[in-house]
Image (cartoon, rainbow, N blue to C red):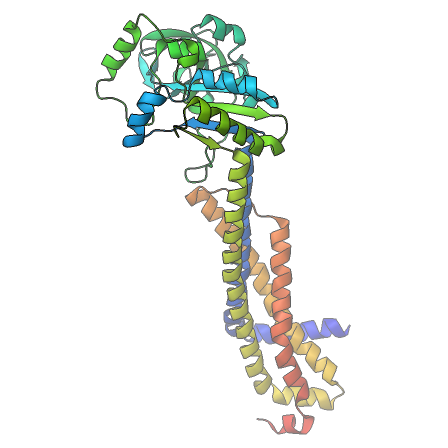
Length: 434
């Protein structure tokens, strides 16, 4: 019952000075709000990174073609004119015993259209293993198969967004699309995959905008896509490519990237070492490729996220400390103003512990209300950031609990000194106070 009485006194005192109480708890409100918002942003970023790594693959090493300039480009034209090639993928598959899959990928220049309406899309050539390595699922039809690659079949698989743009109201499987005036039959449609907003992605393009061909078909019909801008006379490039009577051997044809999948994520570093050794030897040490390991990217992202959390936590802590100092100052002023009340309570039987308890409870009530308001502010901030900045945020129960506990400790620590000061006032001196 003593606690209930002290709570009643605390609420009556705070309600009697509403504006002062509100201003006092603002530091706690913004401190708790910033903690929740910061943890929500961090949780969203962590989720996005994990999702992207899951799509890229925790058990893969990716090799990308690298554009060269200057003297090294002249040297590369003599010693490694084709850059990354289909033969590199074959060599890695033969030489790397722990590789489960080695998948060549070739992005090509091609204009996609259906019913004479062009659609923005990336045209990619690969093999059946690409779907397994990249965790792609067809919601309609199928993905590229080995016999499609062997026969250089004129078939394709559409990403979800491409399908919606080309065939919004009907099934795409069995339909025909045009790629730079060449007809291809649709044999599958991929499930839609969420991709992080711009600026969040680690290295993941939007597969919903992809069109997949058998890699032999892509290399037979279209020129390879390079990172440099499209040549001004694109039609001439396509026509020249199609008029070529003699194609180079398959092993010498250029690709844009390759993916090596290993048996266990711990083997990705070893895979990178093997890839570097093999490609350095085959390319005569020309650095016309770069290796990307998604697991390493995740570790770097998590390290950056930890630094971000520390900085934001420090800022939130400063807000809580400022709020705590504000509470202590107001409580000290309140002790002076309520000296007579303290004297009367001491004379009517209250001991020092009762006085300490009364002022501590008032401080805890202030921080408790401030924490509740801060939770609302933090959730509102997280929702606003998610809506307008298009960052994913996750409000976790742990963040709410931690912020409330920290706020309570702030009230306890900064309310203790004023409470002790109040209990130390002698009853006679307190009764003399005006």
